[in-house]
Image (cartoon, rainbow, N blue to C red; front, side, top):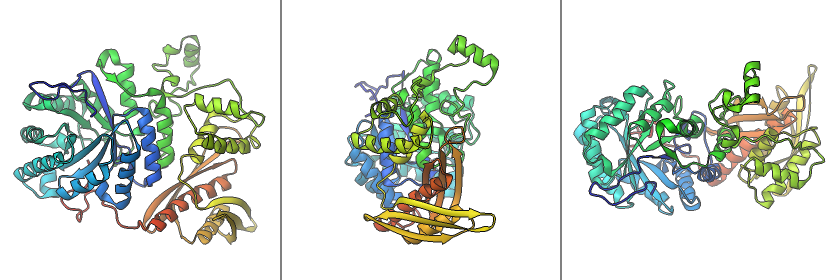
Length: 539
């Protein structure tokens, strides 16, 4: 259980100064447009979330697709420490499937939900308040047969009739809900209003002390973090969100921002946070890498410019006393600076020490692989920076096993030449070579990959960015490729942008081939899908 509980006449009594973090990056975060994580990526990220120390990991929506079910099941079996939750609508079928995926978890939680606002009842559910109340209570009671830890969410709670919502909350707690989540589903609330809303529910629901009060805020008006903090100040003890704030539409509350606000302003909020702060930066970069969603430079806490000072006045102040212009240290969230310069003459020990400083604890096999890539890069660059090392680790290690691997690449292009690419790809221990023409060297190379693998990919999005400055900077390419109606994200890095592009495209096509071999081409339940039962998964 995530709560610290003692027996009392009101049931579960929460430690008022402890805030519990419920991470839904793997579920709501994956609902970001264009994001699709495979089973291996979800497991890798869940393991990092466990290292970060979140209290609950919502691993997915098991009934949404076979892939979601498999991912939730794998995370439940392999990730220890946090509670593992699975989302399910307020129906027996959803709850049965969710429990089948979760039952191997060390600490499982069934998370069931239904909408409660009149606008959702009328236009989406086409149900009366009485019908929804009855369905919510029945779902909690049914889920309780499987596990003692049941969370109930009142979708669109912030726009629900308050009298009706308080009655429903009271009844689901009576039915056995241990956590009651009151989401601002469409990001409509403002902080003062949302704080009063949480306080009113606390005051008007007689058995509220028998459950944890949770909030789940969206960022449509840019106030998800502010609303979450207002809720915490008014009695919420579980906060739900995602790393980097990714998610539906404008996204969710950024958990790293909430955590650092509570830490930095502890004297004001008087709350305890159990996260391992030094894993924040690493987790943020992993989420960005796996989802292909670039972090804006001025993003609070984890943005590239979060600890950068360009103004002369600011620089002078920081040099004299850091706290003049920095309210938190970069080291606290895992951003380390080192005077040790790494280059082609650096040894394995120095390389390992730098990775350890950066928060990467690699197994020997992983270290050998990363060191090999470091040496290859060091032959091309005079100095290898921390950003370069981070790119090596996240692009070379945080990926599933590859069936197809780039062996060599040749290309010819120019204003008077037809762009042509020749590529050798290793598969099943053999090198397969082919060549093709295109509108440019990148397009030609992508055609070659399609021909060798036997899958046609449609390039939906292509992003190129420099990992560091300088003419010898690593180029980082992220692509979104559509195959059979499904989007796959690929990433690649190299000092040669054509090579980085091919590595990124090949990474995406490996995922497509993996799904093809597993036969997972079925349609996934989407938000407000009219064929999916009673209601969609937007929350």
